[in-house]
Amino acid sequence: MEGFELIQAGWLSILPPLLAIVLALITKEVILSLSAGVLSGLIIYGAMGGLGPVQTLTLFPQMMAEQIGGNGTMLLFLALLGALVAVVTKAGGAAAYGRWARERIKSQRTGKVLTFLLGVIIFIDDYFNCLTVGTVMSPVTDKLGISRQKLAYLIDATAAPICIIAPVSSWAVAVASQVGEGGFAAFVGAIPFNLYAILTIFFVLFTSLTGRDFGPMAKAEAAAKVQEDAAEEAPATGARMYDLILPVVVLIAASVLSMAYVGGFFAGVPFTEAIGEDPTLGLSLGALVALVFSFCLFVPRKLVSFRDFMGAITEGVKSMVPAMVILVLAWSLSSSCRYMLGTGDFVSGLVATSGMRLSLLPPIIFAVAAFLSFSTGTAWGTFGILLPIVIAACETDASLLPVAIGAVLAGSVFGDHCSPISDTTILSSAGAKCDHLSHVSTQIPYALFVAVCCFVGYILAGFVRSPWLPLLLGIALVVAGVLVLSKKKTPA
Image (cartoon, rainbow, N blue to C red; front, side, top):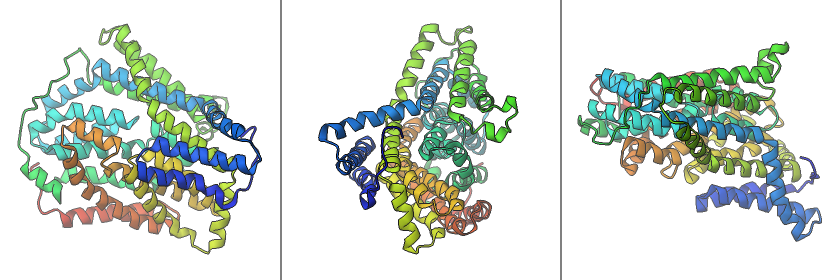
């Protein structure tokens, strides 16, 4: 970072992230906790660097301004993504999918699988996922006698777990920005090691196809009755199902092509190198193309007026502001630790001299991330705090880095998935029109079951440094566990 001289603060260098963690656990306010962590780091830097109080205080806005300037394309992508989500919703694409589904779905199995597939399709943002899937599928699942608790779980389990392994998503940008140089490639490399996300997706599909449930969820399913949803349905606007799907397809295609173009693929650079050159600029270009495409798709057909289209853009950008604030503060905390206080040098030296086997780190990292995310209700804040520490701990063993990053992300998503104060948990309850505590109580046994399978997988992953054996082991444990724990099938 320009303008800041690195000092070796020793054990003081780990106080800022520790303070952020402790405050997050106590207050459940991630923005306050990250701000306190950044300020404490700057105070330590100012005191050891001989700066006065005013100079030290000035470092805070200076640090944040530098992070905003250096990560402008990432923030732009989030803003454009929020705008695209709001525009597609306003045009009625999600409502059109719901009407199509109600006319064709006749069985519980098909209803659950199509709910799962819709969640997979809407991978670009977890908020968009929760609100859209719930709004679209709740009348369908009510009519089929699928419990509100089951629908809420299907929504929640295809929100963050899908977004965290999708390279074209708001989550991918957030994670890549925390890693630093080569962050996008590191994120992609860690995808196979995100055992919780992958096993959760498999668990949802397996239980949906087989109709098997256990624990409180089985009781909720047994008590569910066929009912007609009395909620107001979004008025028909002339939208079709493709008005939801086409913008997502264009976003993916345009983002991949834009990343390749920005990286010089069309000038002879290998594709894998090109897409990692400046991925956030490519994603921003892709989102802009998708937004322009949506304008051409919706406005001429009068699905939305020009004024409503522009108003939806404004609302969409506003919806991303909390995520942007968290990111800027997380970047500031990470940068102050990495480039000002020498946290990386201290942590890596501590690990190297501790005698602890690095192979045991992944399950420990998974458990710590899960606890912090569950307690704070935010996956973004959790990996924003933990990733810099984990990256520093793996400096002496680069082969462990993708496993460790995968463990951080998996634990963050698991904790966020079942935390009663998580945004996505609350939105899933609201989208399914399910009592919030009922959703939490039926979902936690499922999330814990998958998490235990993941923990066993991470014990193995730390030694083999390959995702395939741990994944196979996890899948086998999931299948065996479901078959043993479920007493009977629900109606197809």
